[in-house]
Length: 151
Image (cartoon, rainbow, N blue to C red; front, side, top):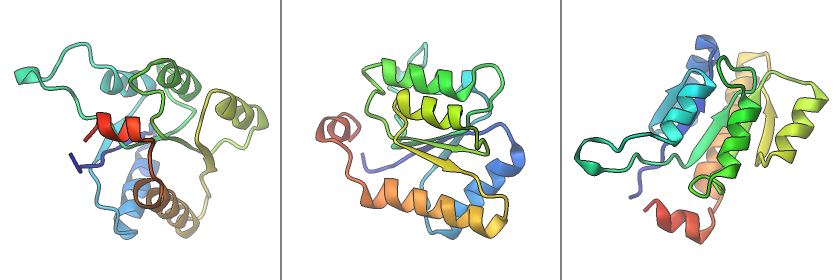
């Protein structure tokens, strides 16, 4: 399967729209699945029931994760992603407005692949999202085991 899905975990509708728009402007046409809180993200990543026909849900190739989320915060989502063998190697980029040093440190302690602070200006935000998408979806080569499980 060559279909690379991006899981965007974002509760702010404006940031969601800007992120998707920025990916499209950067010619990143991958499907973007949006989870608007941490519980939705976990339900997507760890479905309780298979899809109709017994199919497994497609794992994303990349997770863009906000930290300040309702229901289950981003750090808890990251912790659960890293604790499960199915998602342990999944690239997770924390994309947040938090500039708090404890959030940065804890994100890396829990296994974030990258921590990107959302710039306030649209053109800076668009450029940051475009660069993140290009790196993780085009340039980065995932581990062979992870790649084989999802192809």
